[in-house]
Image (cartoon, rainbow, N blue to C red; front, side, top):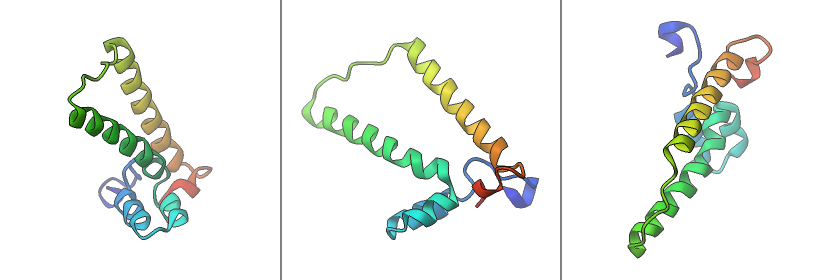
Length: 96
C-alpha cells in the first residue's frame, strides 16, 4: 500500500510479522507490525474458544449487540490511531 499511496496502512508489514513469528523471531515481528503481532494472540484465543465450544456442542454466550458494536468501534479507533502514529515523524519507529 505504501507504494500506491505513500502512507503505511495498519496492515503494512503484517505478513512479514507473521513470517517472523513462525520462525520464532518475536523482536523482528514487533518491528514489522506491532498491531498485528499484539493482535494475533487474541485472535488465536478467540478461535480456540470457538473451536472448543463447537467441538463440545455447547452454546456460546452471545455478546450483547451494544457491547459488540462498541468493541468494533474501539478496534477501528485503535487501527486509525496506529495508522496516524506510524505515518508521523514521532511514530516512525512503528513503520515497517
